Image 1: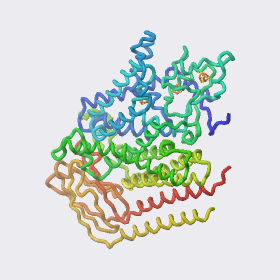
Image 2: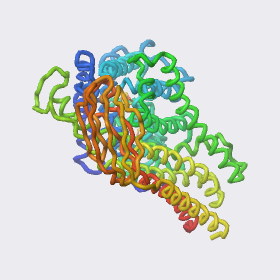
Image 3: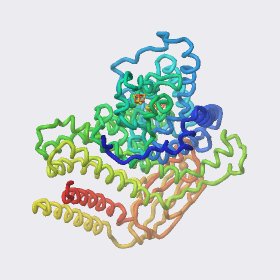
Image 4: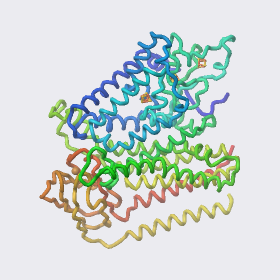
Length: 469
Length: 152
Ligand code: SF4
Ligand code: SF4
Ligand code: SF4
Ligand SMILES: [Cu+2]
């Protein structure tokens, strides 16, 4: 079968193969990532309460989030999940301890079927999102969040097999997963024909899913043979180790191709996930970088000031939920409806179009997240040397940079935001056009159907830019 | 190419250009001295948006209300740290650059300090109006390009 897009197997290079398939790489990388997060928990709890001077806030919300949104996710997809420290204790228990007890019922509980979608994950993400004003400014809250995630993951790993936590619960995983579909890297089978060969004729025994003495069965509950998307593949490299036919490739590919491929399966929960993730950089930008002090104080659920009471907090929560789950999806629904009318089609329902086109917002969302984080790092980078030199805010001066003044670099921000937004619009239209093109036979119809979505895309981009230029 | 579509695209381009020009026109005014008194409080400024015209002489007196604050305008690189309650500081400059520039507090004043912001808008904001036109143009040309491209 001819592949839908150009790809090149990086593991053809022996050195890369040796490094990536080494059993030591993952634990090593994970421990390297685990250490700073333990430090985040410690400094967050016993360090100074001012976020700007505490390691936990600076590390998590300036360094880590920016690294994820600007580098790791756009270029290397779920690479963070490869070394993620959140699941480390849980996975260690599962692999080293639980494996000794065989299949006890308690550790192999079944994940309820009603929860086999990303809705719960979406709600957890929104919950964290609502709290972001306190989360990104209060070291203590950041520490609690990190501890909650690690504890939640560990409990889930103890009770359920494989990475149920990652698939159905993890909030950062929601962001990482969706946008990894845009990354120029993928794990896929080399030749599906080999997978389909019966074992009696020299085929495999589906070791990539069941596991073997060479490695674990796919922890992410993926079956490489049928995998067409990056979204739920954690790049854990187990299937490379287990596949007896050496049939797995780590491909480099052009950006975003999977979103345009016809094999991609469209699911409604994932569509909602893409829309909600598009709403958040707008909400964060408006709340955190916008000029309105009232919304910041209303969102600051911990710091009751005289003028702000519970009513305002409730109003704030309703406002955010309304934008994220109401206004933006509502506008998208409206666009889908108009699109149906304009194209005059009877072959597809509004709901199907709603789901299908939502995937086209992935590049736009990614660019807006990148833009938001770019502004953040340019404004606040000078806190990094400060918090490394004095992580607890206790008056240390380890590197001599504790008293570095605040030095924002503002010149590139408007240019960069414009570039991010314009590319987001263009890349999003490209994906959208291609996905509409596979629905409608006729080009005229496709373009008519595109107009309402393009208009919505433009409105989102313009609203976003208003806060930066 | 279908004539109706060519016409439609021309109309869209026409409307956006006219809107753009009239927006710019509407924002162009004579130069004045603009004086503002800005209250800095945890965590914001009042007024939250300062609107001036390009070429205006802008004088801003900043009063810290509840804590020690600072005042910094992006790109203009105007900065006054350590404004204490009771002793207002005054800054002045010529608004020679067009656009919206974020104002930030530059002295750590509490948890939300990094997000203590306001806007200075120097009209006509050609950057913003230009991007509205740019995004519209981008979409129109995308559609036109897709329309004219030969399928293979
Ligand atoms: S999904 Fe979440 S918990 Fe799982 S590996 Fe990725 S970031 Fe870590
Ligand atoms: S073990 Fe290898 S050959 Fe078999 S199904 Fe999995 S990827 Fe395909
Ligand atoms: S086993 Fe393979 S398919 Fe499964 S998560 Fe790991 S790399 Fe992805
Ligand atoms: Cu301040």
